[in-house]
Length: 81
Image 1 (tube, rainbow, N blue to C red):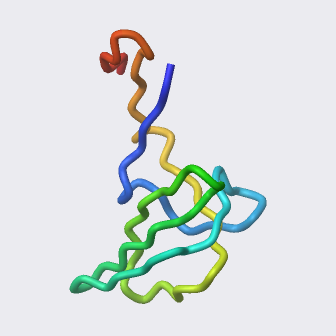
Image 2: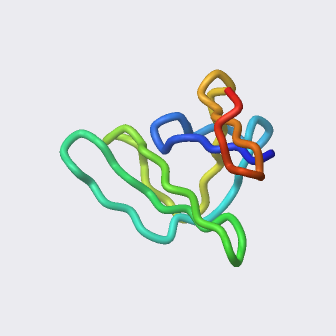
């Protein structure tokens, strides 16, 4: 089983509430939204959509909306929920 979550369903949070912690590698402002690409380890990167007024910094803590998680079976890769 694997899970996926969309960038708009991740939010900046405190360290205690975080599902993921990492360093912002790239940030881009597009209109009222900031997109950040967060390195969470040597091999994985997350995209996150942040409100325009979010202070961009090197370290960030993220949590997701549990209702927005999409589950997939690892074989044959079909969506479960």
